[in-house]
Length: 347
Image (tube, rainbow, N blue to C red; front, top):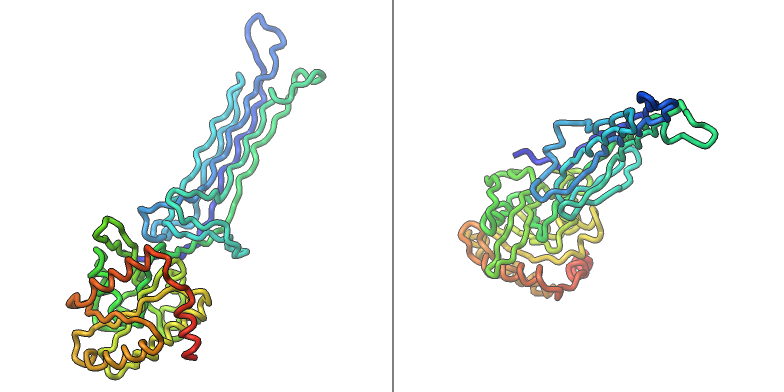
């Protein structure tokens, strides 16, 4: 399925219905008074957060969303019918911006939360409303108010408790496929994963954790390299990061990649370097990784940081990793800034 996390749309609410000029005309009742009804309210345009949606794909094929106009008032004091509001479902985590000013108007992070993007125009008053002691037969009415028009930019930041980060081919997609029901595309070339993958991790005590595999982060991502900063913003919602290192390739400096990726996080948003991390050493089933593991462990021991050796392919070490993920997600023992301090020591 195509993943869309940014769209630009135009919304227009409905115009209010005009009021009516009408007079009561009945046999044997002379000089019947004014009885023109009010016009109906125009329909509004409302964005509603829905947990059933994963991305903004449903809005990418349509650029204009227009609500209906209210009906005009009628004689005999009958008011025009209000137009229904146009409800536009969006995924949880959608940020609504006014496109011309870039101002954030709403952040829809709660299921069924609503934002009125364009208010419907008020219906006009009929001539019955203008009767006074001196004006007994008014022939005036009020036109309905015009609706609102806006151009909005919608940006999705995935709502995941855990973000899985790492350079391309570190094994992020394989890990999320092991710990959840997510089935991302997996292959042995860089940038196999072109979109984030969400997975629900089911724990033994009936609790669940939502995890996201964040693709495309390489050196220079904060300024647009690789897939650029397009997916870095999805990390901002997470409470915990699983930072995967692949030490199986002798031609890759995995420690350099570790610090480089942390630097990208900090350059994109300085607060991200304070996010708690679990350092995972992947592909330990391969010979070179087994040989290099003691050296890597020694390096992080000096920083007083634990590492979790695993093999996403065979499942080795994943149970211990998930126990630690559960502990960190559901406890407040983590000291935010721990990674931050060590990272700055390194530089």
